[in-house]
Image 1 (cartoon, one colour):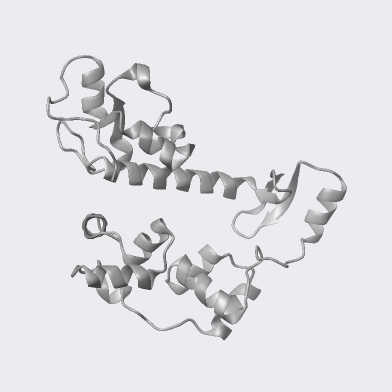
Image 2: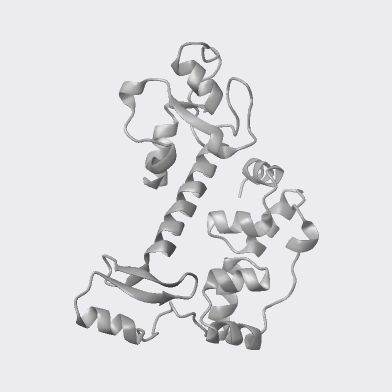
Length: 238
């Protein structure tokens, strides 16, 4: 991992666990690079190595039908760390390979239902939908997962674009930062709001055509009340 990217993420207040989750790495790997580059982690005392997770502790949480995300929250560790210890102990959560479908899932499949009321450990009894892979999934969980991905993608793009409005420097709320196309006729995808469901590389290509503006400056640019500074150019994410 390069020093510049790590330093930028640490300045934003991200912990080692959060950085690891973003890049799909183990927390200890991020810690290694932070140390190698001579940087200091946020909340270092919390991010420092705290030893392994106990087998009995994990077995109890798995038996409680908790997901990896729920276990990670319960033990205050990253999901990558939880996955590592589950694999080491040969354990798997209810979504793991080899788990038998619940009776209600089997009944829904036999009936050929595209949607069915089932019990979600997170949301209680709610509507599940049959996905393209042939699995039933809680619609609310799926919606929340999509929203999380959109926020994650936008966070990456915003930071790669400088992290602040190119006119006034506003950087307090990511939701208030918009990507403004310098040449609207070249626009292929929307980066703001629902458009963030597009693949990251396509979004990065689109972001190269844009500058980052806060909502106020964006409105003023659209109404031709202010102009984008001559020095501001669409950035090429590194």
